[in-house]
Image (cartoon, rainbow, N blue to C red; front, top):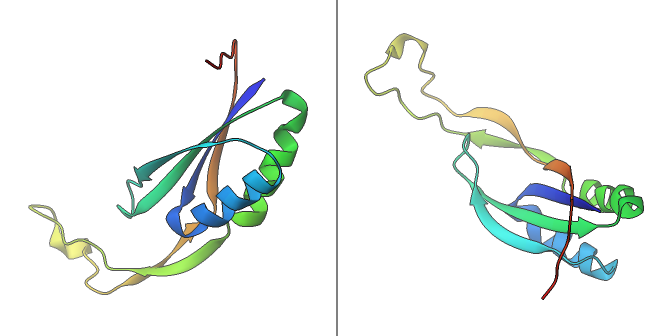
Length: 109
């Protein structure tokens, strides 16, 4: 058995949740916040049998797309202002960060 932990952007959360339910996968969702953009994410915990991991990964990949977004950088506090860029920059956001971990035991009460 494996535990799939998928961290996805909030914009993709509902679509991924619906796709997992449609394919009969159960997931626990937690609200989370990314450290780089300080934006909302959703973290999914999905317990699956070893042979179904690839199918879950395929569902995640199909429903969590990366996109470009303009971000206004935060000004430095007490740092070197010479390297500060005062205008928005375009960064790639979205997609999914996924961890697959082995599960030693599983209990459902």
